[in-house]
Image 1 (cartoon, rainbow over the protein chains, first blue to last red):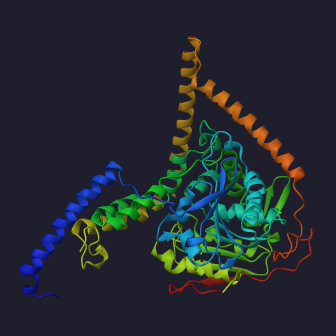
Image 2: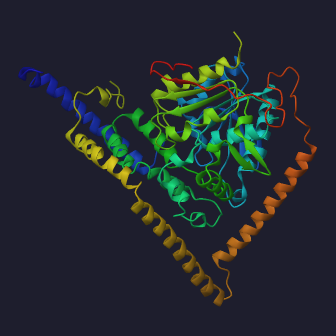
Image 3: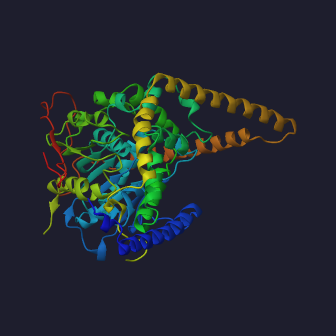
Length: 367
Length: 147
């Protein structure tokens, strides 16, 4: 315990006063910028080229530093969820899945689904699993010169990846990795329960474009942790003097509030097949005119579970590994939340290296 | 030290009083609110509010449409109907394009030369024994253990 003399040291008092004054000035400056919306954090900055597109879907190829060739093959195709912006996987320099994988020697592609409007309201699961994904995979192979790819799906992107690989055995997918992928929808939280019980009619959620609006998506996430904003604002106020913190905060909250509409037809299918029917948990899904069986997935498979994930809880993710038919199946349980699997210090130090290590073990690595 | 890069809060020995108050409130309100949103009562309220909002919007739309039509003017719902028809046409074009492409796409069984991809699966049940149980690994926080 500090002695009375140390507490009353004039130098200490002066230093603390000076620090507090400096912080107050910085706090005021950053506060004004934040409220005025100027100097917003720039996101998704890794240089990339659009190598393929179809309707609103774009396939991006991320450039390697100094155009050096990748050390690992095959290339990785990142498949994002339909309701969140893809830039979470390339949030900021030093906090980017894309940047990390490029640094590990991989060739990285990302599939961005775009922002749906009235036309995309008719997009079904088949549109994504049987049309966009197979064509995107072919485009990756053609652009990279690789005969196959590693598919890496996140959240609903993982669900699409799983269905696409299971339902399209001709797709040149060598490895399949999925993170926080909902499988057993009976554990998916209050909004899912309301849909299951029929308390919310599907038509009452869809807007005039035929899609589920972005603010409904955002609300359904926020209701999972109603007081999250309270601690978030408290963190911001406490660290408002810290430029680096403020930039990171702005990037993260920008993404957390930047949802995209969910195509109406796909939403209805998801509600009927998964939320109410829980077909994925049974391992068989009616897709198109056939039954897709997860047991038909025979490629090496990694299921990543965030043990602190409150959006897609571990109980909702866990069953997936036991449903696929591959002889090489692993499940990786990590002490991270839904977003913490890909963003933040924990991702950089723990979760991304663990996942990259699995991919590397299932890839060819050039010296 | 340069402005904006001073010693982070985490290194301070104590948090300010206001922050401790917020944390205390969050410790109580957080779990309670998470419990509340999982109750039947909350589900009932959300269901009712959603339904009432939908019904109200439809009623207002109908009233406004009637008013605009009295003056022989198009209502938002008329514009929306046109928009839906255009979108439907575009979807039909997309469907036809896809069918034509699928007809022309070469079969992809066997993949390209030198491929390390798995051979196409044979159809029919019973072509494979039960797969082994998945290996489970947990990160020990140091660097990611593997199964």
